[in-house]
Image (cartoon, rainbow, N blue to C red; front, side, top):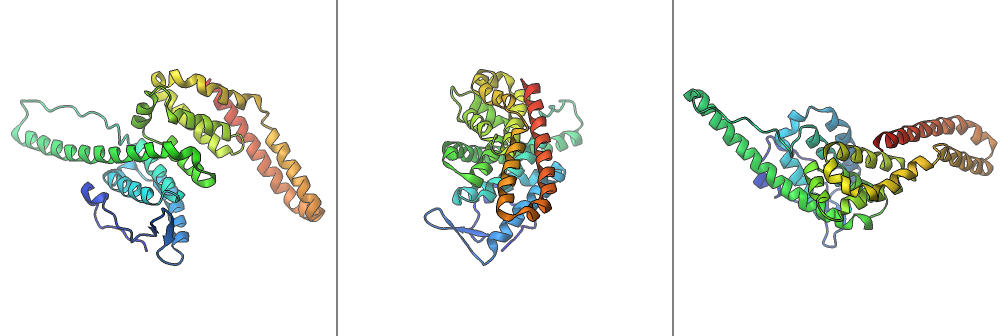
Length: 295
């Protein structure tokens, strides 16, 4: 069953969520449905949020972010094999990045000769900001611990869950990324290198990894610089691969399919397959152009 609160609860209540949601965890870490059809509803909710939240103004979600993040981290920790939680967290972290939630702009201090009314308003504003900062720090501490645990087990995951976790980790706040890059051999850099290597077989993963690298280069270049030698070979492979190879492979698969199902089906699906091949070929060319520009 789905439920929503009428007003955002306090941060102290955010981590105290029940298990009466869509998915209830069992003792062995697996999950079960609390009602028939809950999994289908949950997946639709994930897709809805992925489409809706990026289109909203970040200011509409700003006061809810610590509540949503802490609740989702709690649920994701209790059900670590549910990729939907990782997808929801990634969508929220992208919203956090748009409004610099974990790196808020500094506020200018008030002057000592301000009017009494203005001074009172400024004091109240500072009190509200202090409460928000406290919630933000508690949220970041909880999120950081969860992301560190994900880094430790990400390489052991497979298929959709692996892709969802990698997408989440590469969308981590710059504050977290900077902390990781200060380490001698950061697991996050190794994960990025692994994602680039796997991106040849799964183009969306390559695009996500390259977008993360571009962002880190723009915002954290001094910290990233010592780790670039480990990433350059993975980037070079994208320049040595012909962008048309995937289209040729798709054509071969299509030919084999035609031998099995006959010429009639091949004629019906041929145009659609060619169109998909051209789109993928163009996407790979744009990816190569981005790699050249990055280098």
